Image (cartoon, rainbow, N blue to C red; front, side, top):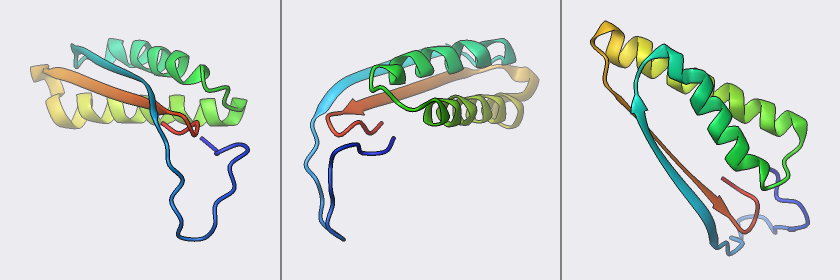
Length: 92
């Protein structure tokens, strides 16, 4: 997420505080790709992202879940863990 309203000088860190955190555990099956995308998108929506930022995040989640199911587990199944944190500077 873009850090709205926060100006940074080059190589200076802006302090940030953890605002919210979510962890999800679900079967690593392709049917859960849409669920993961929707849940992460809803979590991020609280930060008031642009439509483009939200679409990019949802796409990244889709790719990550699909890749872990196809290349990590294949037909054997497994467990998918998703952890996401929201910070006071609007970053995830």
